Length: 359
Ligand SMILES: *Cc1c(COP(=O)(O)O)cnc(C)c1O
Image 1 (tube, rainbow, N blue to C red):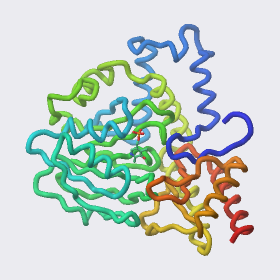
Image 2 (image 1 turned 45 degrees about the horizontal axis):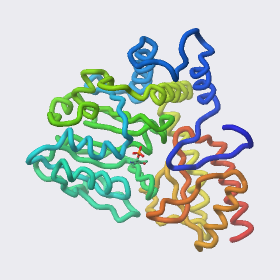
Image 3 (image 1 turned 30 degrees about the vertical axis):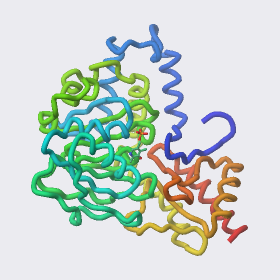
Image 4 (image 1 turned 45 degrees about the vertical axis):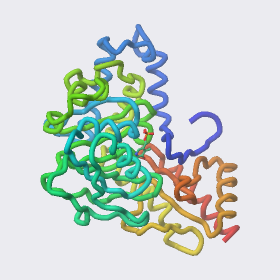
């Protein structure tokens, strides 16, 4: 962070720890070795190959990705994957089941419609997530798609779904690498990088080899999972800079105890804010406690006028980007993996003080 201390709770781009920004700075200025800056490396050179390998290894080790799964580095963001995954896994007569629980999963289902027949497996009401035993799956579906954290709505699945015999596909953009995961249960995990893995430009795909074999033929080459697996994410120029930043994020997480410790930090951060919400009377949440997100903490004040005042005063105190998603209004603090506990403590102190003055 540069200049005066400010804290960002933005949903669209995570703040980064100083150590990571400094590591990236060293890569750019190439203080470590002679030769080219990170910004100048062609993707075909040995250093670039090493960066791709390091980041892949970092993700594999943190998540415990088994040999049954490939890791791909693509572009276009999670939104592009909504269509791309349906292009790869769809085809005539194929059915994709979608669990529609909020803003992002609705978009995922909508985009998929051009490539696969969409069946709605479940529909949330915006306050509670339907558990997997309430999902309705027809006899033969190509896959079942859900969104682990609805960042606009403030909802998060805390239990991993139990599905037998159906390839499970998950948009994990908002809570990727924030907790341990049994990767073997998923056929396809995807996440764009700007929320928990650094900066925008990279989309990570973790895909079961058995699913790769079932991909359709007619998919643009840079989006074709099978081709990208064969070419090790180098069908065309990969986003090397974002991949290098992601590598630093992985090292940072590994040095701090891996995903078990990340999950503990997440719980601690979220509790700072939910504690205030649970005290009631001033801050409130419309969301069922069992479905509340530890990553996207949504809250409301008694009136919209108070919410506007809260936002203005928060900003004046260096607490930035707390406006809720336009779909649902109110306020939202995004507590991605790299958001410091200290930032959340400062926000909680501000919230207590604001309540004391206005409540
Ligand atoms: C932010 C977000 C997206 C959109 O990601 P882009 O990288 O902007 O395409 C998709 N899904 C979820 C769950 C998100 O939180």
